[in-house]
Length: 262
Image (cartoon, rainbow, N blue to C red; front, top):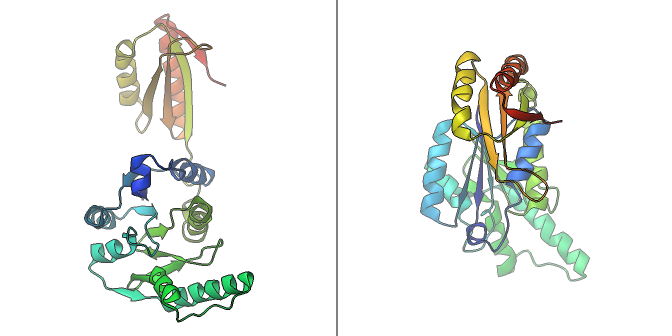
């Protein structure tokens, strides 16, 4: 199964906020021996969100979606998920109770008893309207749940809520996938050589070692580092180790200056 990440919000595309999900999700997956296969950033456009989810639902991928599940006019993800599957939005009873409990708690904390039937609090219940058949994702921060549909997991845009919710999904639903495909990555820094001169070596390594990917990351350098290329291989540990040994041997044969990374 591939794993994907969707980040939703005009504020990310406009630069008003810096995304905090991508790096954290990559980290959480790596800690569990998993990796992210793709990611997309979408604005608050209902049609685009719906079309994207229709495509990703059909893919069979595991997908985490961050943002757009609140109850304000720019929150479209709940309805888009339902529309993508042709399902009605329904009020989830446990989700409703969770929100009501949160409202009562906030009232107690403020010293002003809450009226569950006030227009404001009734509007908050929209956050528990999900596509029919959705399951809840617990929110340890404020008890306002996210929801799950067909290997898709929808959480708020707030990192303090989203990240523990994603961790919960991984640990409760996908522990059987953890560390099933051991992964290795090794690289060197190559100096004084153009990428084009290294391309034949990269192509030969990928042809010789099935399943191993070769990568090159050029850098123009800075005050502390010369211009260089990070050249490496990644994949299953055994063929990756063999490919790396071959890479170093070829660089030495070509009399290319390189340095191992620790």
